Amino acid sequence: MSNAATASHPLAEAFASGRPALGAWAGLPTAMSCEIMSRAGFDYVCIDMQHGFADYFDALAMLAAIDLGTATPVVRVPWNEQGIIGRVLDAGALGVIIPMVNSREEAEAAVRSCRYAPEGSRSFGPTRVALRDGPGYFAGANQAVKCIPMVETVAALENLDDIVSTPGVDAVYVGPADLSVSLGLPPGNNDGETSFDDSLAAIVAACQNHGVVPGIHSTPTLTPTRVAQGFRLVTVTADNAALSAGVTTHRQSVLDALSGTAPATDKAGGESLY
Image (cartoon, rainbow, N blue to C red; front, side, top):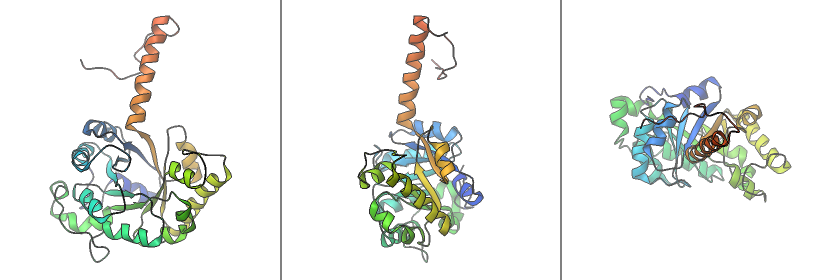
């Protein structure tokens, strides 16, 4: 289990060691999927409150479920707003991904929301997290909590050095869809498009220059490429995508077996207990 009192959790350890941190994304508002992904060995599980379906009460249960496994609990908040950032930290998040950060001023606001004074202006009231981490939470919180602004627009690229050099920014996270749209490209991963490729390279270089971890939303097949490009915070899969791929694969394996085109085996996994 992660522990802010000692600033010890897989995401912090990956950042310190330099190895890639691999994570999973929780867009469905279910504690069960969070527990499954946390027990699967990922470094972090991120609850998506921006484009996912979780509200605060969903996130509260999902954070508790992540703690049943070994992953660091992370939340992508809906916006760069101190109230919701404080609430998810009080509920147990040890990393916060903040969308649409386009300037140093916005990066500074994100950092302030993640840190207690004198490094920030986070209000003290660790409701659930104090139950998990005990009386030592306050002393370790500023070091343990990872502040991760998103760089996903042309405006952010224009202010890239200002953003990544902001004291207290631990990592930045690329949203490929929004970045592509801002560049005038279709939403998604546009590898091979010069503007997209150059933007990713610039983000990695700026992070390396300032000692900040570069992160990106990825897929299982793209992750080796992203790591080779220098990204060290990489979301590998998402619950809805994994569920869709899994049930599609299982259905097709049954159809293939019934038609005689493939042997009926248990290799697809997903064994039922019922």
